[in-house]
Length: 144
Image (cartoon, rainbow, N blue to C red; front, side):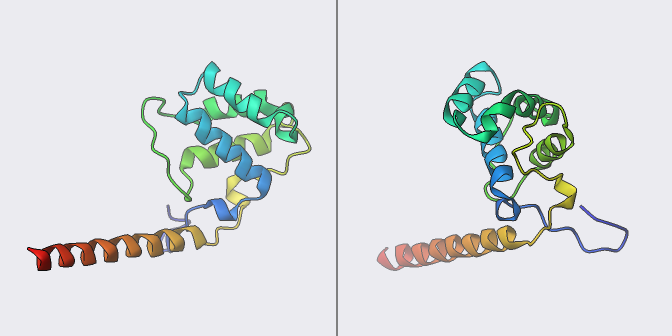
């Protein structure tokens, strides 16, 4: 994603960039996707959020989940970096003045500062895995 011609690519929005309410919504969205984006998923999420401020806005959240989702057939957990669909969920809920509970602190994705911390953590983690795989292959080669 480029902000303008010749500009550096924007950092991806990561979970560490989010406020607690925003992170809760994204976790709920991921659970909704993982469970098949339907009544069973919504029941499980509602049960787990009962007693929290987010519970009162679940209808708005489920509507935003459906509106933001482009591909209901395939989904992979993106880890700590957010997908464009997840960014759309936040933006839709931030703009919803009718159903989203006022008690939740949700910003539109385009106004959330992108620190790049999550992408850096992913790269560090990937380098550990690559190094471990290299050592494992080297050890295997020496044994045989």
